[in-house]
Amino acid sequence: MISDQRSIRFVRLASVALGLLAFAWLLPGLDDVGIAWDEVYYFDSVTRIQEWAGQVATGPDRSRLLSQEVVRETFNWRRYYNPHPPAYKLAMAATEAMFGRWTGEVVGYRLAPLAFFSFLVGCITWLAGMAWGRIAGVGAGLSILVMPRVVGHAHIGATDTLTTLAWFVASIGLVLYVLEDRRRFLAIGAVGLGVALATKFTGYLIPLAILLWMIAYGRSRRAVAGAILWGLSGLVVAWALNPLLWHDPVAETLRLVQDTLSRDDVIPITTYYMGRHFGYQVPGHHVIVMTLITVPLSILALAGWGGAASLRRWEEKPVGGLCWTQILFFVALMAAPGSPNHDGVRLWLPMFPFVALLAGRGFGSMIRIVRERTPGPRAILASLVLAALFFAPPYIQTVRVAPLYLAYYNELIGGAPGAARAGMETTYWMEAVTPAFLERVGETLPEGARLSAWPNVTHYKWLQAHGMLREDIVVTDEMPPEYFLLVARKSIFQPYHWRIYENVIPDLAVELDGVEIVGLYTWQQSEAFESEPEDP
Image (cartoon, rainbow, N blue to C red):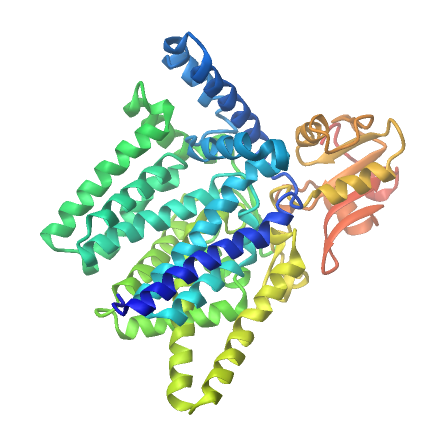
């Protein structure tokens, strides 16, 4: 870790600056992204939590409100669609309660994941800067900031951004405690672990991931004792943040594990990959391929350089070792039989901060070499050229694909058109049904029009109930309708969806580089619409 005070101050300022930059950059477009599939259930759950919290704060019957029965009614609502611990919903409830009256309900909810992402950008900048110097810190922060898929999740009120932040904080907290012997790092890491445990089952895998690093770097008695304290303290934090654990923590934890491990039977989510439909399990190379084609190419190049530099000095740079062990853990985990891989790269999103760290390491290494070999002012010019070469293209790509961040594919596969030709999933989470598109639908459909949709007609009824779709439109699951709205989640297409998608020109469409992601069709009794099922 660096010890020069000027460098430390610079790294701190850069961390704050990039975190604030992330927040200021993304805030204006926070409601441009459509409501994601899971957000419907999460937002309704948050509303119930807000009502419960208000009653606890002001009501006279607190003992009843804090009873196991009422707590379960509040926090275990619609568990089939809403199975996760509630830390992320508590955060959304807080931001909406504080700012929703000015920002609107949706932005109020989404301020929480945006704040988490902004803090993550600052944390990545700080760690890379402290480990490898100023330039590496700035490079790492910029690297996570121009990953379109990660940026997209910062707009969505779900589990993933908080899990990613909590995983990162939990890991680096313990690692820095082992390296620096400072208890505050252990406390910070324990809080991160507890938040992760109180957000998603994924958090329970953090000790397994960190064990790989412990084997390589943390085999001292103090390190083992610290890891045990880190784990126990994390459980206490998780208990405090999850009211479902207050009355029967063992039973609730077992229920969470059971729900997670049986999701392939309960909700067998399918994946469209390389032109084939897969069930809950996909080929082991899926995690590697999807990572390589969804991270901007220049950031991959920097991460490759930084990863190689870290391997050359494995024993000297344990932060680089942390990055490698975390990345290898996720690759092995997602490739293991029985591991879910649906929804793009969402399920291994916590891996990407460590890719960004390696990218920062690579950028710092490149700049150092340039400065050593280029005399005087030319070194500054060369450094600026390198920065533009590696960070301008992914920045432009991130801006250009907005708000369709989750449909992004990089240059290796030819962008969205190349991915479509290769048989990759075009879209998966309904967020491509943007407010701008719904406004166009409202302008196009006649009064009282009958509209059906695929998938999830209920989703559109929720949008209509919340003022995002014109109220006189009759949203129905009866077929045939007058109009049909099709989201190109190809993993769950039926044969007649393929016929419509491939043969009929939509009245309206959401497209990315010519690839249709969402289409509105006038229902016609033509060959493409024949043999439709009774309902969608």
